[in-house]
Length: 416
Picture (cartoon, rainbow, N blue to C red):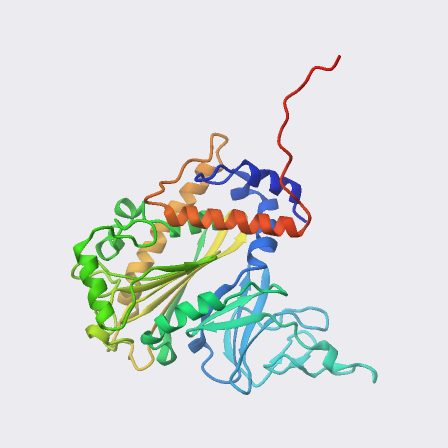
């Protein structure tokens, strides 16, 4: 159990517009707190509906140390559960995906329907009630074909985000997509450092030469281009095609369609489409990128030819699992319409470069000489927004636990 009073003191120490106190980036206490206060209470992106293509499909993954499973039941509805058998708690499915008629625990063969009900438990007494031993459900939502789940008993409202993103994502036709490639990368850095890095492009010109060819690294805040004629032309062209370029945001999320750099139609090394069979052919596919991001751990880009999903999941205080998934049109044929290595090349390079940046950042943060430093309000606006969200969410959890702000320090007064 983390020391909540110590966490409260660390939050009190943080200066607005500055990075966090050291222990929030590298202590076991902070990691345990983050799992309970942040990842245990937030909507988390775990994949796409097309990864569960038919009834009986399942996908098992982990939220930090906690195994979860998403299924498609016999009616085709999405369900999610804690991946823990109601007998003695064994993990039912190892991380991965599959299709089966039922879920069978490998330990004692307790068997569950894809909708969670216990279907079979051998050698139990006559008064045993199967209905009282269904899998423990987890809240699950599909947002325009992207799966989010929340472990909290009372999940935060997702309607604003869902109702904003879903119609904007509809033109990308995710119902006719497929998973083309998935990669995982272990970064020896705290998840918050991974996400601060992912929420700014201040570092991009010097560290991501390939990404900077397509990505507008000079944009500030939430893709604010200022007085930019090219952006104005792009916005007018998108409006005429029925696509909005107005950045939208709410509590813990952002959505915006933005233009790519001149000569780029996709986020690939050469700017050409990485997939011949487009997911969206409006304007011939020259529609920039629809980017959305959700705190605490994810972002995504949808161009005309592909969708990239990025997730950073905590593993330990100084270890984060980064997962990237590429979706393409279901009718695109590998080797003819796309090459997997070429499709993933740009973001694979970028993710490896970011891993090195994060690990170097962590090494410096661990130094006794570390002092929280100021962010650039212009270049790191979304990093500031992320850290402010983290602090506010953490404080809200502490308030719910009856842990208030630390009292102000008082000076010593001589008595007598």
